[in-house]
Amino acid sequence: MKRWLNNDRHATLSATYVDSMEAVDDHTVKIVYKDVAYPILTELTYPRPVRFLSPSTIKDGNFTKPVGTGPWMLESYTKDSEFTLVPNPYYWGEKPKIQRLRFKVITDAQARVLALQSGEVDMVGGDLVGKIPMESLTELKKNNAFQVFTKGTMCSHFISFNQNNPIFQDKNVRLAMNYAVDKKAIAEKLFENNGLEAKSLYQRGVPYTTEENNYGYSYDKEKAKQLLAQAGYADSDGDGILEKDGKKLELKLLLSTDEFPEWKPLSEFLQSEYAEVGMKLDLNILDKNGYDDSATNTRDFDLMLMRTSSDSWVPHGSLRELFYNLPKHDYAKAWTDDSLKFMIADALSDMDEKDRQEKYDKVFSYISEEALTIPVYYPISAFAVNPQKVTGFEIGVNNYAPVKWERLDVK
Image (cartoon, rainbow, N blue to C red; front, side, top):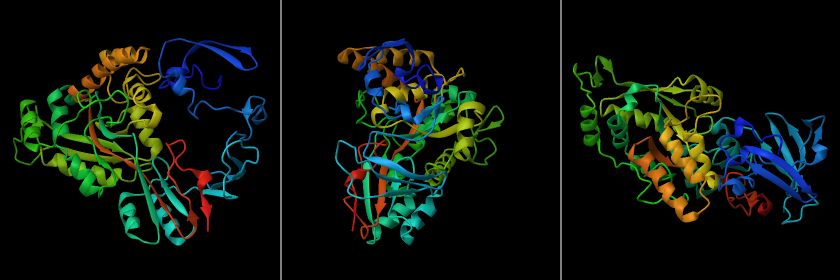
């Protein structure tokens, strides 16, 4: 635990900051935390950054080899290329059915699909790592040579605002940008139902969200135009782009397709939507490192495509990630608001379930009422499998366990 406790890198976890730790006996550890927070025990179950490490994996304070307690053991590893797992003969639980799992690193999304089609690999997919492009997913569903498995997630994809741009201090502009996007068309037409319509920042199944406290704004382009007019924007020269005080309403949208290849067609759809209400959107597509640097450090964007956390990280970890100040910075990733941070902290520190719900009501209602984000769609987790080779495939319970690997078998 000493590896990650009190490390600002893990500031999204309530369990990060402690005053002291003590080994009471061989089976008991006493931890005194700096702040009260109800999610602490949940966070201690996460496989990262919380990991149980065998003493034999550490030499002179450095990690030397992976030794775990799960159903698999590492057989071989080639950096940036592939690794192979074999069953752990000492595992106490359900034993794997196959003798070897080989994972290949294929960073290009289309190349992953081609590898499946050529027989180089037997399955592709996932929610975060190894996503199947939307257009390929639709094609694979129609191809009888493959089986496609899908499952909903607890994640949401949305647009955040850069508060350094004074345009977004006007709530009418934020509302207009919410009304201008046809979220239903994104899910049903653009992505051909490979995802769900975003109706709020968080999905309905996220703990403490309700229809009353967690809501979005319906598609209404005329309403968007009215709000922009109320904010003082007009197209005085007839070129189709609104302006105010002599400045065009032109905005830079930051995105990366490394993890989410569907963000490219999504961003082009958004370009078209905003053009219809007089806004020009310029796309800035960066690799993952450039995207992260811009999001965290340079803040060189007006708008940014983002995602919430998922699974057991929502809502508590996601709210800290999006609305608490970034480590070593005086601003949050999505929106900086001291009153909102206080409300989130108040909810996290409440150990009474009923009182906590009331405090979360205030948090989600504030985010919704102030239109602090633009929800765009809810993704699904999808895998494509070669049924001529693989049997027993089941999607796992979350991003940490995306597939029930021990159930897999081969023909």
